[in-house]
Length: 153
Image (cartoon, rainbow, N blue to C red; front, top):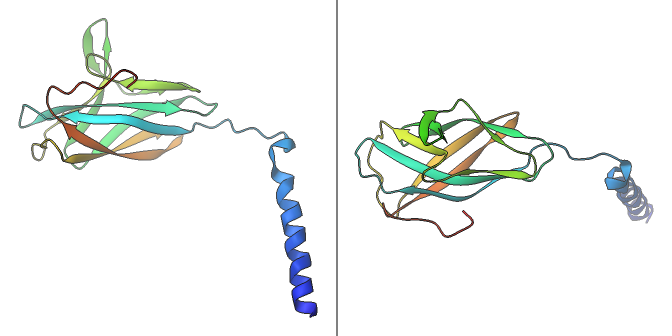
């Protein structure tokens, strides 16, 4: 009988100590907490190029930076649009408690040298790379070439 009583005492002590690391300890989570929504690729009209769009949310207390994107579909670069002019971006910020929206006519992903032309209904896998945060893998569905998301994406 001593075995079960000893196990119960050890378990009770361990559970009591677990509470010591709660929010009451004064520690705050200040890192970036990233999630992705609304990802899609319009079906490419070209055999070698396509665009990709998505929203990256950062619910953390530290800004993150999108530094690159990789995909087995082909080469991917991040582009920004400033004053109506598109140009390659080395990095785009994802503000703390904010969002980075990649959309048609604005900042976006540019696929080049596609290995094959994705078709509507398929998905393209991309990996988003961030400075100081782990990469995020996203399955990007291929939508009709004329697809436009509803408001909020």
